[in-house]
Length: 230
Image 1 (cartoon, one colour):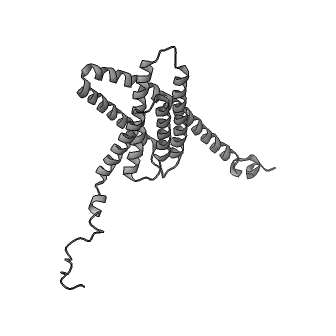
Image 2 (cartoon, one colour):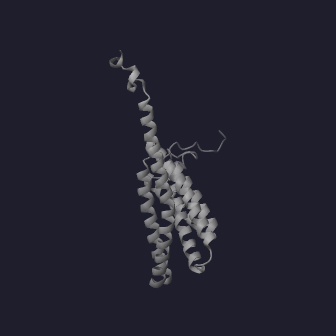
Image 3 (cartoon, helix red, strand yellow):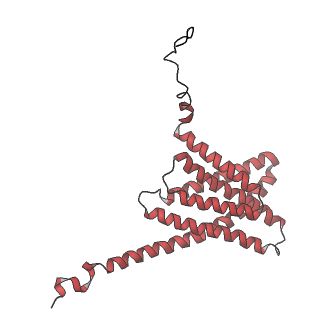
């Protein structure tokens, strides 16, 4: 040790240990932070895109959320992925509402079909992913994801309307609430309809496959039973 340098105080934390309390936030704050980051990032990006790119990005986010929701993720990552999907959905709903309001009803049919088509594909992939998660005992149940997503979407909706009221008054908040509610109804139906249909078809196919395998088992065939001999 160099002369004149005092010996290190053993009570002082080492540099490697000084960052551990910051990294080890309580689980509740980790989930909240992940959710806020996901919502803010997805909503901020989709809100400032045009209608079709915004909806396409939201479809990708929702597809990724449905695929990752049943996997073994850290709580903050799971809530971040879920928040990104819900935030993107609200951002696209705002953009779509403004676009439809500013477009002549006799025009823009191809755009509306493209918007619905993107979400239908995302809903079909999500329904398939939820079916696989429901059949896997070690994955998160889809009902937990859907319940959390519904509550989170409702909360973001309320925050947006409240912020609009604070910024622009009651009339503008009422207008935003009406437009956002209408566009959300359309987008959610475009997602949930194909998703539910794919889920039903996948569940029915699994049951038929199990019945066919059980019907072809040696114990259920007539020739293998000793009572049928002679």
